[in-house]
Image (cartoon, rainbow, N blue to C red; front, side, top):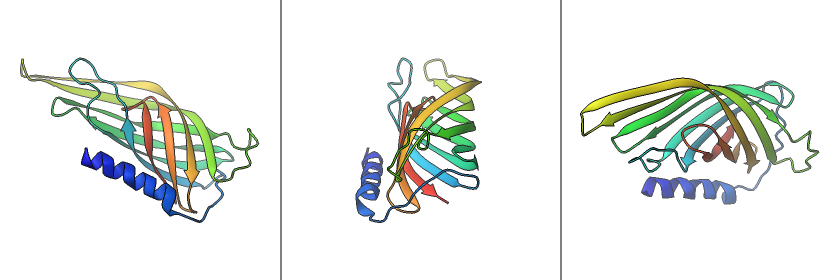
Length: 171
């Protein structure tokens, strides 16, 4: 719980502690690294949503308003099992389409091809189970840039947690 509180304080500190702003227009050659934690969770009987999910994604601009990249995320269920996702995704950035005047905001949505796996240890029967498969993953999110290179993001979608919150680094 202390790690969770520290993460939230770090994100809030980045929101409040920066003073210069930069414009973000996704274009060919743009590069972004997102690091975050998952909020909420999926879980069956006995899992209760599990622990905190950790994830990251990398995006590179391939055309105006279009980025592609990869994602990875992981969540442990207190020694009972774990859930992970890894894959590729693409995003369309809506600022120009919506005629948004705030240059610090980036709204996006997209689709990915994601492999998700789940391992479960049955303590009663001393058995282990592994499941996995490929799915389409939808995501919708937004970023707010606090400085030229750092921003915060919130994203909903398919993965190890329904909501991801974190920090974006413009490379």
